[in-house]
Every structure is written in C-alpha cells, then in structure tokens.
Amino acid sequence: MFKKILIANRGEIALRVICACKELGIKAVAIYSEADRNSLHVRFADEAICIGPPRLAESYLNIPAVISAAEIANVEAIHPGYGLLSENANFAEVCRESGIKFIGPSPEVTRLMGEKEKARATMKKVGVPILPGSDGIISSAEEALEWAKTIGLPVIVKASAGGGGRGMRIIRSAEELPNQFHAAQSEAAAAFGNGDLYMEKFIERPRHIEFQVLADEHGNVISLGERECSIQRRHQKLVEEAPSVVVDQELRDRIGGILVKSLAEIGYWNAGTIEFLMDEDRRLYFIEMNTRIQVEHPVTEMTTDVDLVKSQILIAAGEKLHEIITDHPVCFRGHAIECRINAEHPERFTPSAGKITALNLPGGTGIRVDTAAYAEGVIPPYYDSLIAKLCAHGRDREEAISRMARALDMFVVEGIHTSIPLHKRIMADEDFRAGNIDTKFMERFLGQTNHKEAVKQ
Ligand code: MV4
Image (cartoon, rainbow, N blue to C red; front, side):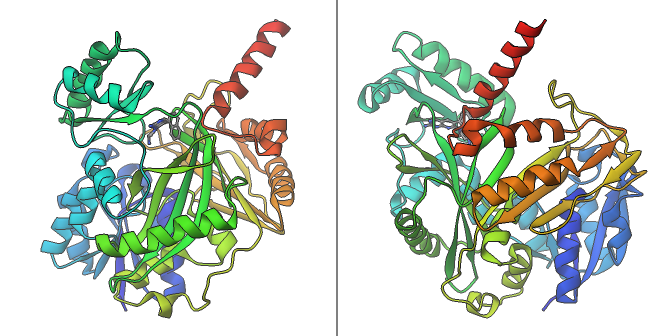
C-alpha cells in the first residue's frame, strides 16, 4: 500500500480524496495556488505545497510544477480528481516516466477514450451498443452527405477531439449539410487543434444515462449500476440520481454484463464511467467514456455502499477487486439524488465569487454534503463554480426527494449567490417528481419560468 500520495486538485474533490487517504492511513499531500492558500484541502492535508499563481495554466494545469511538488514531497502516487489533469494522457505518461503511479488507467487507454471516434469504434468492436453512424473520420462534406443518406436524417456531426458538447452540429436537411459540416470542422480545429469529425444518428430527446464501473489491474471488472444525469444546462449537470427510473434490473444486468466483458478486453483499470444516450424506446447507445472519478460519484456510493475513491487508490496499489469489495454481488439499496450547488446567480447563471459571510450545512438522516466551503471562506473567481454537492438518500425516490427538499431549506449560504433556489424549484417540479426527465428538461423548465415572469411584468 502507498504511504503517501499527492492530490493534484482543489476544492471539494481534493477534500474527498483526503478523506479516503485518512481512512486508508495514507499521508495526503496537497498542492495549491496562491488563491487557495486558506482552502480546506490545504488545512486537512498532511503537507501542502504552493505550486504557483491563481491562473490554472500556471498552477493546477502546470505539469512540471505538479511533478516537482510530487518529487519534493516524495510521494508514490498522484490522484488527479476530476477535470484539470485527470484525463490528460501526457500527464499520465510524465507520471510513469517519473516513477510516480498515476491513479487512473494507462496513458494508452486514457488517450484512446479521449479520441471520441476511436472510443466509439473500440466499443463497437467489443460489443457495446452504439448509434448508427459513420465508420471512422469523415474527410469531406461529400462523404458526410453519403453517410447522412445511409444513416437517415437527422444526424449529428461531432468533433473527435471534443466531448462535453463542443464542436457538435445537428443536421436536419441535405441542403444545410455542407455549411454545418464546415462550421463544425473549423470550430473543432480552432478549439482542439484537430478538425476530425464523425457522424451519428441524432436522438431528439435523449436521456443521459451513465454506468459506473470499477476495474482492477488483473482483468477484473464490476458494474455498479447507472446514474441518470439528464437534468443539465449547457452541458453542465445540475441534478443526478441513482438508479434511473427507466432502467429495470434486466437492462441494468444486460448492460453491466456487456461492460464487464468489454472493459476487461480493452485492458481498462480504475473507476470509469460509460455514458449512454437512451432513446424513446428505452434503448441505450454508448457515446463517450470518462476515465476519471466523476463529480456525481456520491450517488453511486450511497446506493451501493462502495467507496469509489478508496477503491481507485487500492486498485492503483495493485489490489484485486474481490479484496476491495467483499460483498458479491454488490447490493443496490434505495435511491440517491445529488444537487450541484454552484456559486452563481440562480436565474442568470453568472458566476458569483466572493466571501461566504454565513454558512449552514444541512445534515441529518440520509444527507451527505461534499464541500470545501466554510464560513468566512472566499470563493475565488478563477475556478469552476461548484461549491458543494448536496446528496440525499432514501428508501425510495420519493423519500430521497423529500430529504433533498428539506436539506435545501436548511442549507444557508450568505455573501454569494448560489443555485440553491433553483434546486428547490426543480425538486418541487411535477415532471421531475414524476420522473419525466430528459436532456431538454431544463430548457422546458426555464422556458416556463421566463414565460411566467413575462406575464407577471
Ligand atoms: C447526442 C445527442 C443526440 N444524438 N448524440 C452532448 C454532449 C455530448 N457528450 C453528447 N451530446 C449529445 N449527443 C446524438 N447522436 C444529444 C446530445 C446532447 C446531450 C447529451 C447528454 C446530456 C445533455 C445533452 C444536451 C444536449 C445534447
């Protein structure tokens, strides 16, 4: 087992990794930017090293600075958290060359899954269902038209180097195809330095459903079921839950079974998330794989009693899954929901940095709060706006929602704006409560409110 690891992240996830280290008896080394001097991840780590000025490129994304800190502190491994360097194959390679274990899959697999078209082709090869689409990269608008005819309109072109919604164009007619194709190509080239595009059948109102897996370095893989993540705005998730109301045990077992087999074949290890779109006939199609721990991992932890971050560390230390997770098969218990509490204006969605003047974190039965926020603490303007993850667990979805609603009422943040009022309204929404959700939910939800506001005025 490792004696000491470095956490190459900040905020709530850095603190979450510190929790895992403390429970495993591992010394935790924090790194921080000048803006994070007074952060809780610095306070609760065993050691902390300042790696540079506030700007990401000069601190948390500065690979030489991170590696230098790891060498100075003499750590055996680095946990990257999510975002930042977590899916950077070059960083994973530099770690390997420096003799430091990267807590994640191999650089080769990280690179493969970062190229979305290759990920799609690989998943197809190993038997994971994918959408009808192009075979490989499309090099011209003429070729795109041929594929669109084969697949049938509407289609969507996506940047292979993209993901998370950037560099995509929906195409509804042959007339608009050349323009849309070239627009996507230049956008991808400008954003990612790579204009490669591929095409898929476009699903109008998909649900976003993702499967959590754990895989060790010995070829063992388990599926920990799905999360429903359809409640999002501009590709930022707002509410996630486990299980999904539209996935039954038969579908969960079937997809889980496919993933266990296929990820072993790929040579995957670490925690991993396989993202699917679900169509109106409740069929699931692979779209992307994330090779990191995800923001929304707590809902899976609450429904399975598996500690995903501890598991990541134990896997990286070479342990076998059956030594880490002793109950077979893993039991699913109740229902869990997460609200992402952002430091932003609840209607305008503009960032809200500044000092938290008063704070009350809710607790009580079934509530978990992952946060690095504290009273009198400052939310710097340089980083993402997530300040807390409020999670509620209950015997069923109704109980989880009622616990979430009362916890939101007891969650007080003063001095900055937060999304708490927005989450209260989502929890009270009829469609949400009925489980009528898809990736267009927030558009409808916010459209309704704006309409009501307009009527009021
Ligand atoms: C799609 C799609 C419909 N059909 N692909 C957006 C982010 C990226 N991860 C994939 N995305 C989508 N891909 C096909 N073939 C609709 C979306 C999409 C979406 C997906 C997941 C969650 C929210 C979304 C919001 C808008 C569009």
